[in-house]
Length: 186
Image 1 (cartoon, helix red, strand yellow):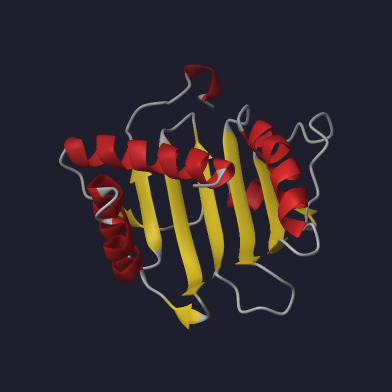
Image 2 (tube, rainbow, N blue to C red; image 1 turned 45 degrees about the vertical axis):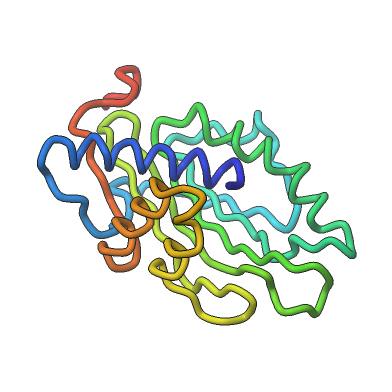
């Protein structure tokens, strides 16, 4: 899994696990409670953010990731920008990322995979949520059930997580019930 998605899915999955272990249900995706405080910073294809230029908290970003393509260097530009994107997110107490993905071998090809995502966390409240929309594989619409079946032999845990994610409709929200970082409590 790609770094930013792994960071956010890991945070969401961990919060979801802690939440479900306490007996409370995983909830459908919801926008972050801090959404009204966001100034969204938009970044283009392969654009790495300047790590010193965005001290916002909440930090809200939108990334174009539609040109993850081998033939024109888009995949390389994406790979080179991704570490800065992860580094930008890591210190934030409140973070919301929206992104738009498309992976293809050559420009004009049907994407191998394509989706739109929205992921957020609040380390002060222990809340997190993630949603995946408009997923296609090989140009065909794909749902969470198909994705879970595709990964089940390799990772039953990931398949189970995907199925739980799908039960929430368009995504899941979770509340660990405790701060993930006490310095972030407001």
